[in-house]
Structure formats: structure tokens, C-alpha cells
Image (cartoon, rainbow, N blue to C red; front, side, top):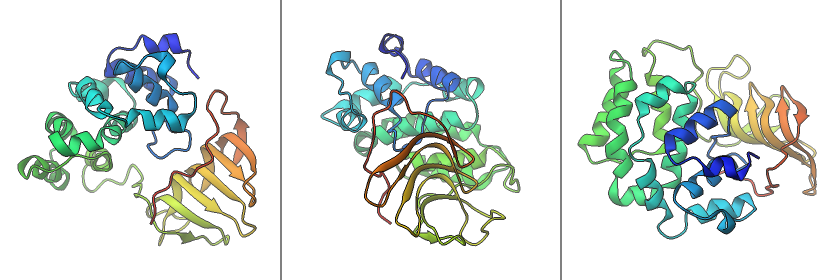
Length: 268
């Protein structure tokens, strides 16, 4: 975990995003690590004292949603230059940073649409001119007083390419349980039109895989393999392995990030 004194010196959302880009912070809204670096940075950004911030990620997550903290975060991040982030952060990860802002201000946004009105015109400017479908989607949000959500940013990612392009994989939102050819059950994000499983898609993003013996893996996937942050749990609930994975193998620890035992998957 990055030292507190260094995160404490970040007074603007752009600064947080630049550091996150440099150090590859987790920006997955549903990751079991609860994107801890961002949680801490957001709380410090809105003026919460270091000594008031809980140790456990779940408590920090809940604290950010208490009282008027969502409104305070809105105020701090509303004037971000998305064009600046698009030129100084890796594509499409800067969209993930924006997504966390929308994710943690969702209740406030329903009432005042502050980020919707500030960010949507900027997002439209990122989308290719020949991608009329995606542009119209965001234009309709403004015209019809709609609401911008973190899930909508996927349309920005795909909209930055011509409509005929398939350069980047299309990542779905959460799917229903999928039974893979191996016999394993999977719930989570998938990559569409994958050669491994064209009908249902291949585990790609965040999800939970359940094996025939009852053991489970919860965390990040790439091309159907454990890849990113995750934990392997025995059927009795005992955590067998926990840390960073690459191509199905455990390669490092999650030092500094508290253990999270509750799966953060929505019902489906």
C-alpha cells in the first residue's frame, strides 16, 4: 500500500488519476480488493482526516457512502478535464477512474446530475465522429435529462473506434451463471465472441468461478484464466491462496490490502 503521506498530498482528482496510471491502481468497481488506493485517496480528497479512516477495506468503502460524502466527492471531481486524462493516462483505464467517481457518487447524482451535466459533453467529444450510435446515446442523456452511470463508460471505450472495428474486446456487464466446457460454473464479466466460447463468451474481467468440488476462485480473469487480483477458497470457506495471478498461476501477494471474504457480485 502506498504510504499515507504521499496519498495525502494529492489535492486534485487529476493528480490521483496520474498516480493511479503510473502505478497501475485497481479501478475495478467490483474487485474484491475494493480498489483500496482510490477509496483512501477519495476520502482524503474530501477532507476526512487520516486518523478517522478505518483499516478494513469494507469499512472504508461504507464510509465513503455515509452522510453527504457523495456530494462532497462530486464537488471535488466535477471539474476534471477528461481531455487531459485522455492524453496523459492509458486508454481505456482513465475511463475506469471516471467510473469510480460515478460509482461512489451515484446517490447524489440521482438528485442533482452534477457529473452528468459536466462530464457527458466531454465524453461525447472523445467518440469518433463516424460512430453515430454511441454519440447519440450520450446526446440523448443530455436532451432527456438522463443520468450518466459508470456502466455507460463502456460505450465511450467502444465508441472511440469506428463502428466496424473489433480491435478491442467487448466486455459484458455481469452475466447469469455459465457452465463452461470444463464443468466449472462461472458468474461474472465475459468477453464476447471469444474463440474459446463464442456463444456465452469467455471469463474476462471480474467474476467468480465454482469448481465441481465446491472450491471457488473470486477475482480477475483474462482469457478464461486467473489473472490479476483474486483468491482461491476451499469449499469450507478457508482461503487457500490469495494474491496476484498471471495466466492461472499465483505470482505475488496482496501485501497491504486487507482480506475481503465477502464476494462483491450483484445478484443475477
